[in-house]
Each structure stands twice: as structure tokens, then as C-alpha cells.
Length: 496
Image (tube, rainbow, N blue to C red; front, side, top):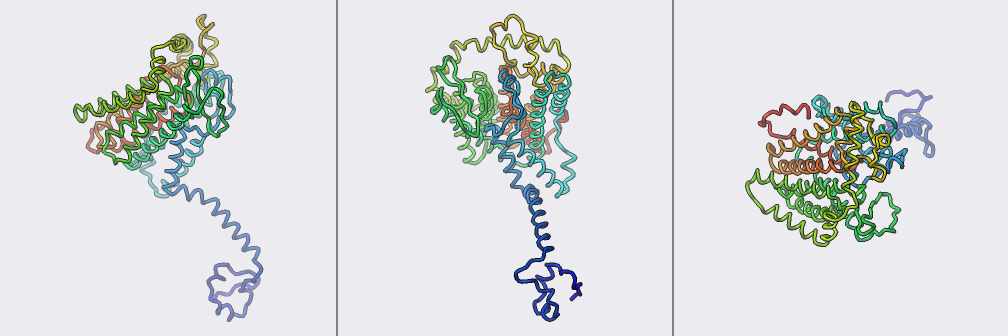
């Protein structure tokens, strides 16, 4: 054996591996550990090793391919469930349509984990090609940049930063999905979770229909919302998503995706899930009593049917079956739906016109950078006209006018380019890809197109619909990259 200084303890590994006979033959009992005593140096070593393991364990877990899937599932399920809070919440501003606080949610934490995992995995694999081919959406980047610059002209800087922070989080979600989703299996994983999230939300909203009364209060970790309309004659349900209009926007997009699954050649399990989503989701959409949401879904289904007809020829089976299901679901609510569509809405639709005029006056006075992100409600009192003496005062119920007023013309153009670019890519994926990606891309595109129409009559400033649309745009970008190599190059791909 190698001689060891008698004044020092040998390494623990040498003690454990040396033969006992050799130790005994040496006559040096310093090699033999005491039966009931542990060297202080050994205790310190074990403590250091334990600390190192504790530090490295989360990073080792993030290097596993299963953990990113779990984190992505949390992000998708959190879109409707809204597990989180708003720091520095400003109730007064939120009451008139502003984003009232800094959003910190399960998505925030999970998204941070996803990026750490992405960095670790690319570093381990030394996949420099991935880093050099990141799918950066220039219109989206420009829109976020202009929104950030508009903070410089904002009267209420904290309010502006609340929205810019949410835009950055949504942009990171787009970037991750667009670059990490690479295979058909990845796409089906995301689609399945989107359907499961919609089904879960639909169950919650349907259950609220039979359990909620005007006196119901909740003491739950998730926020539930139900609004009573027309002097308490019927209830508009928003579930955990938010307001009934926001819930309708979320459902109309998700239901378009569910309908597209029925056009694919996917196994039966996917189609059964899609049918459940369509059934319960349609009931939930009716319960929102959102006319904009109803119109958005009808337009999405019409676009989906048109696409299927263009690809497969004339077939009325799916449109007729869909219409029949919707009619059956509509029967229990036909009187309330008829009242909502054709009855007195207490001036709800008419009140949007003065708000649009108000937005145009703000734009005329602030054409370059607008009044600052999330600051429409801060400055609107300066631009009021006599028609608001008894009118409804809120953020303008038109997403495009809201973006124009708060970020200027460049911000609006970038926002429109981002949305239209997503629709264009989706249409090309439907044309060039094989099943099931082709039909899924068409369903996602139809959902966004219907929602773009819905945005003409509502604010849609909050997290659920924004992150859903941006996630879907990222998914369409990922599917676009999966097109066959024989497809013709797209001259507009770099700007959308």
C-alpha cells in the first residue's frame, strides 16, 4: 500500500476499498475507523456532497425530457385556470378595463423552468445549429419593442410596465413553442393538452350553471366569475378564465381546434376527446351569452368546412353533423339565446360607438407612440365629450383601436402583421402538410381568424386569450417548419 501520514486520516474511499486483511497486517490501527465515532472531516465531506446533490438535482431533472413536458403541460392548463395573482393591484384602473397588476402565475414559474431546461439540453447536446436557427417573429418582436418604448410617454408608468411584462412573457411562450416543438408527436402532445384544458374549463363552467346563485360566494384557490345580466334574469358565466366575453374568446378558439380533430386520420381516442370538448364546450360557450364569441365560432367552423371542402371535395356530413349537435345543445337555452340576440341589451352594443369615437380622439392627439401601453383608461377623462355624461365609460371595446391608441400606428401595424402572418402560415401548412398536421393547422388558423373578428368588439387585454393566441401562433410556426422539403420557399417567412 501507499504509505499514509500517520497524522492524517486516509480518504474514506481507500478505507472502504482496502482489504481487511491488508489493513490488519499493516499493524497501523489508524486505518481502522472507530466503531462509534466519525471523523469531523468525513462529516464535513458528506455535508458538502449532500449540498452539491441538492443544488444539482433540479438542474439534472430539467435535463430530463419528461420534465419540460410536465412544465409545458402546466403552462397550457394554466391558460384557462389562471393559477396566480397580480402584485401591486390597482382596483380603480382594473374596474375600467386596464390590466390592474403585475401578473405572477404558474405559467411564469413553469416558463422559467422551460428556458433553463432548454439551455441545459442544448448545452449538453452541443446543438449549435438550434441556436443559430431560432425562429424569431419580427412583427411580434417589433410590437413588444414599440410597447416597451411607449412606456416613455405613459402617464402611469407602473401600469404600462404591467402590460409590457405580460407581453414579454407571452413572447417567450411563442419563442419556446416555435423552436422546441419539432415533431408530429410534439404537436399532438400540445393539441391534446389544449383539448384537455378546454374540457376541464367546460366542466367547471357547466357545473357553475347549476350551482351558482346571486348570493354564492367562493373561498377557493382559483377565481370563479359569473355575472348577472338583464336585472338578474340570466347568468353569464366566465368560469376561471375571467369575464364571460374573455371566456367566450378562449372557448371559440379551442372549439375550432376540437372540430378540426374530427377531420384528421388520428386514432379514435383523439376524436372521442374532441367530441367531448365540442359537446361540453359548446354548452359552456352558450352560457357565456357572448354574441361575439358565438359569431367567432360560426366563422371558424365555416372556414374549417370550406377548407375541408377544398381539399376533399363536397361533403356535407361534417357541417350537417356539427349543426345538428349545436341545435340540440341550443334547445334548452333557446329562449335566453333569442333574447340575447334579438332582445333589449340595455344599450350594450350602442355604448361601444362613443368609446370608439373616444379612441379616435386619443389617436389623433397621440399618433406616434400613443399614450403608453395600458394607459388608455388613465388619459381617457381628458378626451371625454358630452355624450359620456350618462354613457358607459370603459376601455374601448375594440382591440385594434386599443393598440392604436396606446402604441401608435407602428404598434398596430406590427400587431396586425403578427396575426395575419400566423393565419398565412397556418393556411400554407394546411395546403402543404400531410394529415393530421394539415387539418390541425387549418383548425388552429380558423380559431385565430374567428378570434380576430371577435377582437373588433372587445378589449382582450388579459392573459388567457393573449397567451392562447401566441401559443397557437408558435405552434403554427413549428408546423410550418415541418413542411416537406419539396414545398416552394416562402418569400415572406422572414417577416412573419
